[in-house]
Each structure stands twice: as structure tokens, then as C-alpha cells.
Image (tube, rainbow, N blue to C red; front, side, top):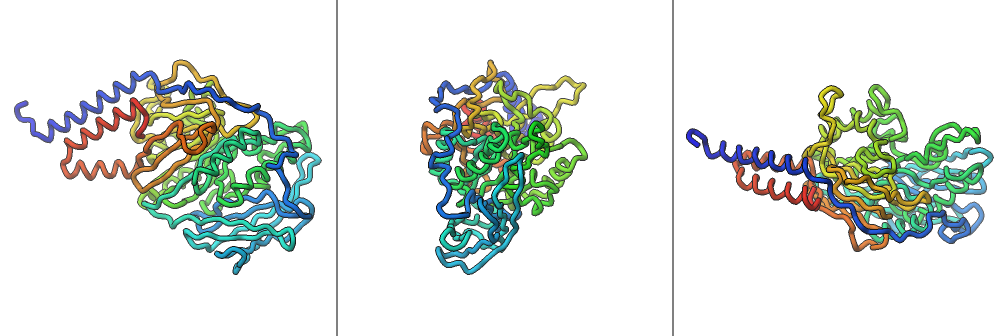
Length: 494
């Protein structure tokens, strides 16, 4: 073409490639619906006399031990436990050698009633001032009933720090739950991002509610006593039960499970943020007010502005109710939160949003629906490279069973879906990419039913800009075309 420079021609080719890609994806009829049929055990809770709920030997021995991150940057943990029979010191002895405890930390003790159930004595102790990347041994209780555990602190916060997270949601305490927990513990992950719905004790009545919170605490102790679980609440934590005169939401949960919400300037334990290794993790509450001017809305706006992608390139959001879901179960329940927050998720280039609630697995493409403004009619999700991936991992194994009815046909925003129990892992390698795996329980930890390479939103765009500035347009066009083709067709790269 006369008067057209080489760079202009390359720019035209780039725009044309993007145009073709967008039109192709808009006409794709969804992704993959797995044909796998889960051979599940009955979705009933394990009997209370089963060994998985065994109480420690000795009078008033500490039980239901669990730890979570205790500060913003990973140099503290909150250690919690219950003494079932009588008050005891809320004291932790700890050190870097087994059996040798140079340090002590003290916390607080509390208890509560739920209907006529009287809880044990619940202890929460903040252990801070820890060294990064260090194995600590700790002891709680005293005398013959003292118990000893250990945990590993994360590496210092930094952009290329590798770290592996496990992702679990909607766990419960069935035989399927046990399968999920055992397979997760073989995964090599270092901390759990928990997506809400812990014990499912609200499916019981009267005193059995509190009893099933106790059994769940003993059930998960095999993992929670040794590595931090970052907690989030779901609908089964609300426990609004007026027939029992129990109308305070989240009562059992808030007494038992602490979060480091004050460290991220949050006003509620139900929403908070932590930085761990190379990730900035934001936890939202789907069942607390979040519209404009509410405390959660104001906090999230401020927290997103505090995110430093130069230090923590991976931006991860946890919530209970999925924003994008093509299962008949809980379809469209996340729409109100999507309308409020999705634009921020795109603006800040959130890498991935994990949710639970739906008892099945599903992963989306990178799409958004932020153009819709009531009057313009643009009310359909479209491909958006700045949008997060939305992944539902609500398949822990609770007694409500699997959500096996997906909407047909599979919508274009859905990349992969399967009704099976399992857990996921996110293995961050450096600032640019991570390996993601979802493992169904029947396959154990060695076979990933869904896996892909996740490219970092912030650093991938930064690298591409630098290459464009160096006039490497031709190679960039080739990579973009190849990347988009793989993403839209196979879902192996995101």
C-alpha cells in the first residue's frame, strides 16, 4: 500500500488478528463438559464414633488445633485450640528445635453457648516476630496432656518467590470429605485457601449443631495444626436459627476461627487480606453487605489501591458465591456482587478468583460483563484479557452431595466443568507464570483432571509492552495469535 510504513502494516496485522480472535471466541459454543461420572460414597456424615473424630487422650487435652496467618506479611500465626472440660492457660511454647522451646506467647480464652450447647474453652494465641522460611515447633497444654506440632513460615514477600497453595471449598465431614482431605495432604501444598462452608453443622438441630462443630475441628486437625488455612465464610456459617432463638449470624464460626483482619485495616473478621510469598490474597464475604458505602465496599476499594504488583505480582480473590457459574445449582446468585465489584477486578487485573458454593468444579475463560449499563443492551460476557479467571472449587465432599446438573448448552464463558469431588493447587513459579491443577478425588494427587499454565496479568502485560517498545512486533503478533488460539480452543493456557 503506497505511503504505508512497515510498522503501520504490522500494527494493522495485529489489530486484524485481534479482531478475528474476538469474533471467533464470541461464536464459540462454550468449552468442555466432562463426561466423567463420579462413583461417590453416600453423602452422609461420618458417625461420631469413627476414629477420624477421635479425641486426644487425657483429661482436658487440647483438641481442634488450627493455625492461620496472623499478620499482613506472613511473620505471624494465630494458633487456636479447645480445652473441652475446664479453663487452661492460653499459652504457646515454641522454638526452632523439636522439644526445645525458647519462646512463649500468650493469648485469650473464651467460650459461648448455642441453644443449650456449652462450648469448650477456646484459645487464640498470636505468635508474631517469626523468621521467614523457618520451621517452628510448638507445644500447647501441659503435663501429660501437652501436645506438640510444627509449622513452616513462608519465604519473605517478593515478586519471584515460589509458593504452592491448596484450594478447598465446601468440605463438610463425610467420607467424600475425608477423601478430599487425604488427597490434598499428599499434594505438597504449603497453605490452604479455604472457600467457605466448613462443618455443615447447621444441617443439624439444637445441641447437635455445636457437637458437629467440635467433630469437624478434630476432623481437619491433621492438616490445620501443621499449616495455615486462610478462612472464608459461606452460607452454612450464617446459622440464623430463630426456632432455637439463635439469630446472631456467624456465631459459631466467629468464636472458633480467627483471621488477621486488623492487619489489613478491615473492620470485620469476615473480610481481610494477607500477603504471602509472591501473592496478595483478598478474602471477601458473600453474605455481608457489599454495596456502595458499606464497610466491605469501602475496605475493598482501599485494599485494591494498596496492592503492589512489583512486590506481590499475584492478585488472588476468594469468595464463596461464584460470579460466573453455569450449573443449575445457585445459578446467578453471584450476580449482585458481580455488578458491584467486577469492574474493579478488571481494572486491577486480578489474576484469578476462587469460589465455592456450587458442589461441582468449573473454570471460565477470561471474560467480563462490565460494558452493560442498563440502557445500552450490551448485557453479555465478552472476552477480556484484563479480566480474571473464575474458578469454582465447591467440591470438597459435604453431605448435600454433588451438583450434577449443568446448563445446556454450555455457555461461551465456561471453559471446563465437571461434577466430581476434589481439590485444586496453584503452584506459583515466579512473577510471570504459575501451574494450576484440579484433582478429582478418584485420581489421587498424581492425575490432574484440569490443568493449565496461568500467566500473570500484571507482568505479562508489562513484558509485552517492553517488547513492543523494542519493535518486536512481528514476533509479538505470532505469540499473541498462538496464545489466543490455544486459550480459546484447549484452555491449557490462561
